[in-house]
Amino acid sequence: MLDGMIKTDLKIIEADSGSIYHGLKNIDNGFKKFGEVYFSSIKKNTIRAWKQHKQMTLNLIVPVGKVRFRFFDDRKKSNTFNKTFKIVLSQKPYFRLTVPPGIWYGFQGISDGLNLICNVTDIPHDPDEVLRKKIHEIEMDWSLK
Image (cartoon, rainbow, N blue to C red; front, side):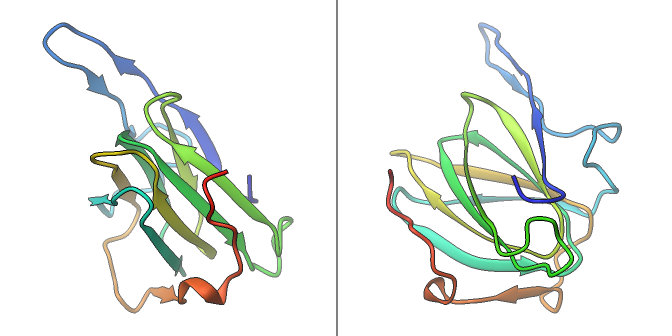
């Protein structure tokens, strides 16, 4: 993983009537404060890249489907400067990925049907706080291998 990222295993409590998917508690490692929760869906093989938050910490969870995330660290003072990282979030295994500000990221749907991302952030969305690049501006292999 890249410097400052935290991977936290989460529980799914199965029941005959339906399941409970844990997400984030205010006592969990990676929780700073509450800003907002939003959900994004992404279709299979679709790629959304690149974004970098200057201040926002992300807490990414995929309770439905399967999504591959790619990250690029261009933080000059980071121990993982110029490194990349990829990871698949899904229900098996089910976990939350905390991503600190300053890391470029993109994601790709890899399951048929609904791929749903939940993001619990520490600040509300602010369009002036996010940087964007086109997909070709950061070289990355997006093939599903």
